[in-house]
Length: 132
Image 1: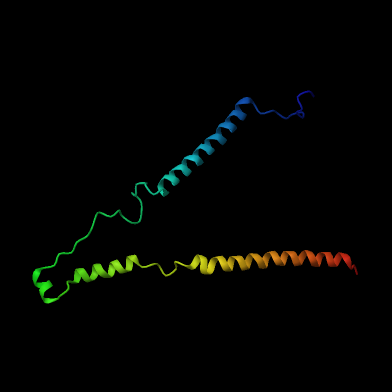
Image 2: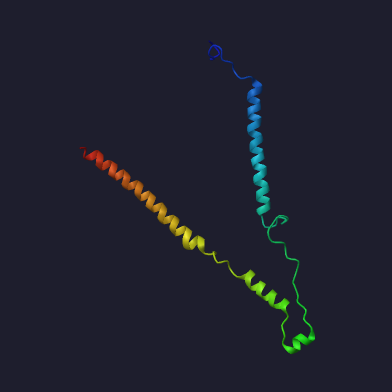
């Protein structure tokens, strides 16, 4: 036949191909919109409505009475604020894990896998060179 179809087989109509094209472009637009929203939330100037840490409201001041300052007593509130400040400014215990552990082990593992592939090909060539 001139149309290239087998007997009993129907060609898709023009509306089916248009719907497929519209569906693929719609999914691409949806992916681009989600990517843009994610990028906006990651940027430094983005509003932090859903973030973990609330934006700072200013400097916190602890007021102590004149009697406390003269006698050398320290209020519990100032001790708690000092301890919290020390804990918040300290680096986390796992701060150097990426460069100290993950990169070296990943490099060693990758090298071992690639060296095993090379040795496998060498053994394969040796088997071909000396058939039994």
